[in-house]
Length: 149
Image (cartoon, rainbow, N blue to C red):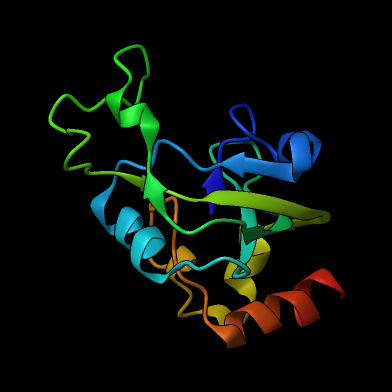
């Protein structure tokens, strides 16, 4: 799950009450579908800092709730307001995320250079989704070869 650190960093997530952050504002259908259809409470999450001087995996988290309608889609004051979305038929979903720990940054360039991760969604050319799936093998590879190395 990608977040711009000036909007919500791993430090912000760890400082949140209960370390829980609502993951609002996803406005891409494919990213929404990954979150809505595939994420379940307890699933591991790489907390990725994007749109910053050195993007990369900055921490670990876990999905803390089942998907539910994102309330920002109905809030006219929110930058994520969607006038086409209705409470009886919401377009956008969200989950709550519980930050578990900060990591020494695993930079994007280091991820790209690690050949076993060549097929990772995050590393695909043109990949810009804020939420992408991670296979069990990719999860294990990052944790054992890049984080603890």
